[in-house]
Length: 384
Ligand SMILES: Cc1ncc(COP(=O)(O)O)c(C=O)c1O
Figure 1: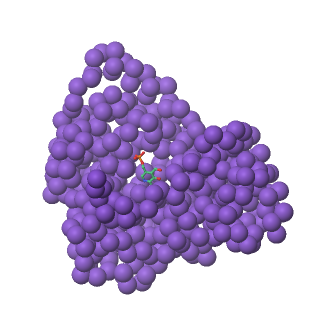
Figure 2: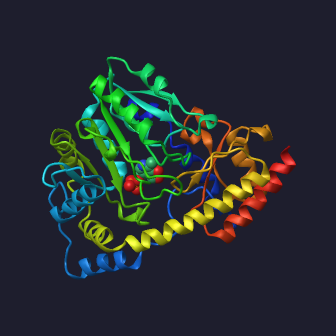
């Protein structure tokens, strides 16, 4: 029987493919996972338990609980003095994953183009392809701290371009960009009358310098689809809860798909997200301080090993260059797993621009990180 040609033409996730190898192996230290090693803070779990006990087991409005939408709108107003009407300009989704897919499907018709920086988060390109669109890649490089070049983006814009996708703090490189650069990217979006999809899922996880958000940019709202969520900052990956904000027109279009496909995000997760926004700031700070200390540890070790890298400004990833070992990204990851039982993600899982790199995630305790990095040190010394 038939399956879709379009779906078949999209390659499987490089991360999943690699981690199939890890499954079934004992004593592996994984620096591969893209999720916090912390459990959701207790006060958030407790509010989920309470909601279940109290019988909150129904659907909610398609757009999500108004109370949660109001809190998100208030947070944005307090932090960035921007107004998003909680009734029509905020949509609660099952994670940023759904929000991104909805945004893409809401704007892409067959043959339309979307500009994406590479290396990039694994879902960006496939969702564009599933929607019938084409990805135009802009390669970012270590020598520029993986920051995109304004002219490179401009060159990719054609009359078929419908959006530019950005993600800062970035997965997999850990880079953030300055307000100046953000302004320039918005300028391109405005001049060409296209959307800027800004995935700010790591927005709370900034270690160095000032936190920049698309929401700071003057008149950003006209072109912006902002995506954010609870998975990373609040260690809530399994709750599947996120949101999109934007002008009424785009949120209405996204909600049209959402109401037929997902209906609504789980009510328990929405209740828990309300608690997260109201009371869990101290828990978030505590986790970020831990990530900050781990980042220092990883970066110091990488310097000692002699693997060139960009010191992450945010997220919980670092993306070191491994070409000095004369191994490809895939060979490096496979041999490291085989010989040292340490799992990292080959950079090519994030696109061709990731060749020559690996992604190390520091969402692992200090003891394990130390051990894994010592093993990487041995491995690299023996390769050179
Ligand atoms: C950049 C980026 N966007 C979106 C997601 C998916 O997030 P969620 O759990 O909210 O679907 C991830 C998860 O790794 C990510 O790294």
